[in-house]
Image (cartoon, rainbow, N blue to C red; front, side):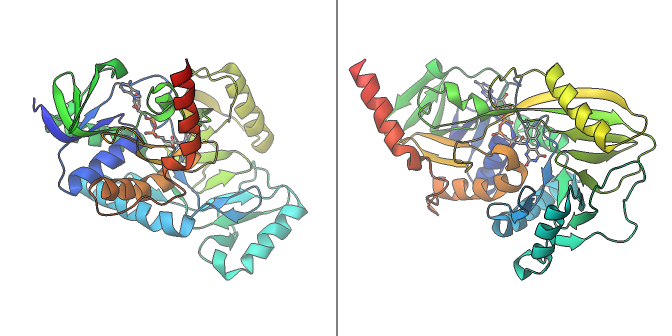
Length: 363
Ligand SMILES: Cc1cc2nc3c(=O)[nH]c(=O)nc-3n(C[C@H](O)[C@H](O)[C@H](O)COP(=O)(O)OP(=O)(O)OC[C@H]3O[C@@H](n4cnc5c(N)ncnc54)[C@H](O)[C@@H]3O)c2cc1C
């Protein structure tokens, strides 16, 4: 196996995969270190993208900029692997009450929302057994991506190049050198951490205020429900095909168990059975931890004192839409072609870094 690379990336979730792919596309040599761990978000994520946040019917942060890049990157990846993992599909939003209808109507009149907010198309996807207390609208420009096969294909790509280390990474194994790092005899100019919620344990970057959120999702078989769009009523029902539907997701901010919880399952089934009256069967229950940041922005950058160490993380609840744009930005930054925008730069937390350094010196 090759022992020297431009970049070593720790973690092969969505963040590490997209970054490694962009770096390699731009001509760098890259290797990935990853071992499947319980709680990894990307392998349980439903893969949806949604240009709106539903609570107040507002555009999701930077949706107009992030979405075109996401579509371009995933379309290219699907073409590269000869697969159809990308499913653009409208979201059918069930309105809870008249106040919500008015919010929706305001956006129907706002040209900035033309691409996304629609009246419900007549007849499409209303279902006698689903609840729409005050009617429904549609979100265009939405859809879902099959993440597990995409990540498996990227993993195989690096494995075939002898550039995948399927092993547990230990921080103690890193030797910082004047011109890069050495990890178990493997040298790299830079090591980039993309370890998801486990960033909290990283001794170099634990000053970054990650606020992880556990999420449970269910897979149900619902033979009578023939949905083509994604149904949303404060939770979602996503049609996977073959009478199977993903139902999710919970948000648990306090007690993070990494494993699926009975409370998570009960919460989802409660919401589901209030919205749907018919037969169903639970066929799977999964859980993961979202690497969410206190200010809900991504994390890109290089350590303030150790230029060979970097981070690409913080994709939070909307990794599918956010990941491609910022992976591209991080790759361009690492290759000296671009800067990192202030809102995404880990140096926005510099004061916390300085405090943690002072505390370490006093101890
Ligand atoms: C239930 C749920 C549903 C979601 N649904 C959506 C959705 O519909 N749309 C959307 O956009 N986002 C969704 N998300 C969020 C999305 O999953 C995340 O934004 C994204 O997957 C984060 O990717 P990541 O690579 O940063 O982290 P992760 O996916 O957690 O990847 C980290 C990787 O690093 C590896 N790793 C970490 N430490 C080590 C180590 N020491 N040694 C070796 N390997 C290591 C882990 O095994 C893992 O493979 C959802 C999340 C959850 C939990």
